[in-house]
Image (cartoon, rainbow, N blue to C red; front, side, top):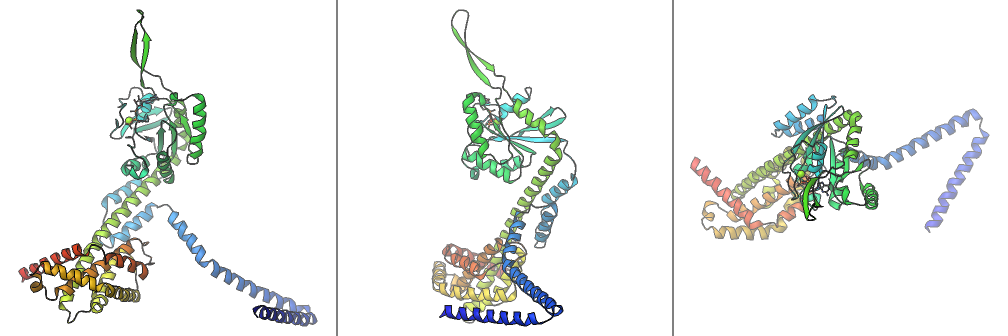
Length: 487
Ligand SMILES: Nc1nc2c(ncn2[C@@H]2O[C@H](COP(=O)(O)OP(=O)(O)OP(=O)(O)O)[C@@H](O)[C@H]2O)c(=O)[nH]1
Ligand SMILES: [Mg+2]
């Protein structure tokens, strides 16, 4: 049936096309050439329109991805700070940091700071002592000898370098256990020498990938190379180079270290003696010498790293600030809901949730998170929340009833206390769910969906209810007595 219909349509179109073609042939060229041109232009325009509609969603997602990948700039960090300031946030330390980063714009760094970073006991301190023999560097067979970053000044040709001896990334099995402060310290330096003393491990790779993701110029160092035969070195060279982030040079070094030498004395007896081995850091020094011409680029990368660190610290501080404020807002509204519940003529969740209280809470949270939500969307959200709350109301009333029984005086202090506490729990759950959903949104854009909020609301309505009801009741009664005292 369908095939027949399709064939019929094709025949009709062909028939129409042929009859038009026949008639056009009979017309003079001055008539049919512009006519065909017009038809092609209209078809091209329609085709282009369809293409645009088809590409619309896709190009937007690509644009969004690019936006996410764009690295922050001083201006974007300032803008973020400005937006958060509108809800009462301030971060003087970050502003000072931004000012000092800005003050150094365009200048090539006179001194380059190189971090000696890596797992415990790989020989970071020994390497520095080999490069600068007079330096008083703490070296120990027991890991953890370097507890804080120690800085040593070193001049190589025309280059002024600061070699920074970092504490070993202690027994970390993975980056998740790494001291993030330590990683951030490494991130602030111009170059990171990642020191290993064996084949590259999974945690080495994780650290290196993280540093590479931050665009940090890296040098991989395989120290204690004297422990390996020429053949093993070749295998290590091939294996490590294959997994290093692109463009990372790998050098083999041997630091000078205290070794025990046994010798035969003149009387034939044996004696052991401790001697400092010579070490060999020539390959590493060569890499350092080669960076002379890269000062500008290294300075720029370090500046960018500082901006990114400031941006991350700021985002974290803003998130903490908003989370604290959101909790305070939700708590205040939950208390208002308790008093609203007591004042209500008859128990009914709709009046309270969909009334000015619910509206006020969502608006306050939206303002705090810089998420614009239309009034109609708030209404939809609150209607859905009311429906959801109704499905939980029996349980909520039971929990609230138990709490009231445990505090017999409450019934007299708070009339209709059971319903009031249940309302308080609903507001507390809804507010925290909205705040949680808003915290995951991109500033200034509203992609907040009622479904997402309802999912979180559902979880909150079943979470630790007794404890939360108790704390709501305590703060409500203390507020009541405060109010009474004030009267
Ligand atoms: N065989 C050999 N041993 C070395 C070499 N370099 C360092 N060592 C020994 O490795 C041990 C640890 O050296 P450190 O320089 O303290 O290592 P580190 O990486 O600074 O250690 P932490 O600061 O504790 O993380 C010491 O016993 C050194 O003597 C080397 O090239 N070859
Ligand atoms: Mg050390």
